[in-house]
Length: 337
Image (cartoon, rainbow, N blue to C red; front, side):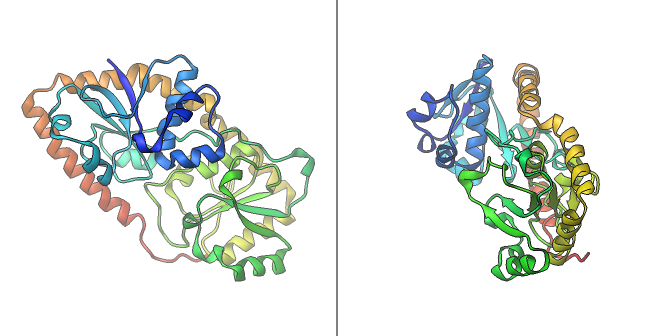
């Protein structure tokens, strides 16, 4: 059965397809954009391993299609013919989005989310391309603290100049947000702070990618109450948690004063990272492409029209319930240390 990765034509052009064998630079991946880059990058890596699958910019009417489906995307690209097709099996790369009932299977980045969303499978995002680990020559130096990601994904309290100056006065540490063109470079990084919000939010739909990259880079990590962090890691063993701006400062002070703690977090993180290397995720995708998806698609095609209609109703119910769970997991109640 033909397997295709779909990326909207306006987000990809010939120059990207020509570079399939060489990879994309940081600047180029910005132009491909977010979830679509995850789709493109997966196809690209599978091509290098001679695992046959297509990259298409027009939505097929048959076969297995791996793509991102959002509400706006659905209205733009889906027709009644797509929805009626008995030969089209849709696999939604959900990333940190909202599940859409048009998809027959969802691929999610948060293991806890996959346990709650029917017809979903957990598969982590790829590690940051061309990741440069912390430079061993820095030794015991502990000076530079960074956040890697879009500012909207960082607690607003930590974005303020007032907090940054307060941290410097209290600890002598420098905190800044890493530019997107340098998200792969951890060479001068001594610790990562990645707290989305100071609340009880478990962020059910958010991945632990920042934690994986920190482990792979050999850098201590401070996060919030994300369910993905708690599921994949062990607080106090391979990462630290903080529930307030003052809590972040306390944890950074601990790290600064205790090099043995830093070393333990890094070593335990390196062990945990074995499941999230490029090779490990490639193995997951090979099994997905060669075994899991063909079987799921075959099971779908063998269903009667009545069963298909019944499944469609259940998918709508599951997706509505999941949206409610995601909203609930982002509640605003503030935590304290």
